[in-house]
Image 1 (cartoon, rainbow, N blue to C red):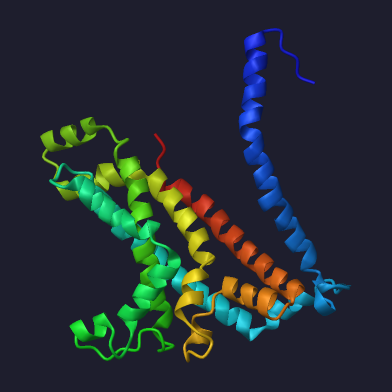
Image 2 (spheres, one colour):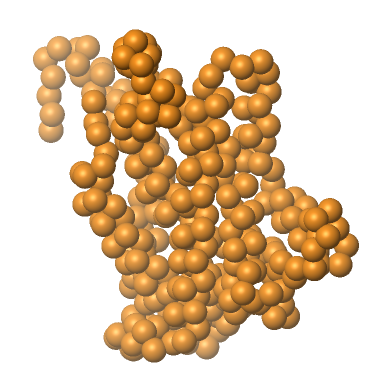
Length: 295
């Protein structure tokens, strides 16, 4: 047991542990234990009424790798990620640069950009379903289009990804604004004296010094986008012809766990998704050494 002769150090030690202990317990109970429980459950076949589970080894994993529905859901998930993540980051970065300047009404603009983050997902889905409605939706009527945004299998997942971009934009902007305000103004003053244009300042000063923030947003957004569920659940019904082309891995997990009551197979799908996220994150950690610059 750690002993401290200095009462102050002893007090700091106990206060420190007292502060972090609730968070540690929450992580262990709500995150760590469920992860191992899910991995354990993936080796079983769910018995009748959720009882009497039968150990099946790697049978669930073999089924996942041969299941066309799982691979279709994986493709749908990657399509969503490849649209939502890069576009949301680029738009958020540009907006953050603009909102970091001294312009009239800056606080109001920042509030407007952040508003989608505080809107309830159900309200967001209801509004966007009306906007996307092919018969009387605002988008089709204003632009004189005849597009089935949510029922066309070829574009439905991209239409949902656009909602994801709109929803997460404000959060990304706030993170980039925080990073921009940490960049010393001396760099920009020196660049102006040297005759560097605004564009050159952005690519030579802003982007390199903001790269750690960009990397953080990239990693967290990829993880978040890979777990997309609520938008798909609320925007696309099972009777929708585009349902199979929008079903994500997390939605597939929900279907097997709570509708089909197949806990073992649903756990395997989650483990499959976890492995994919771990591989992507590992690759990002490897590549970041080439483009992320830490002061």
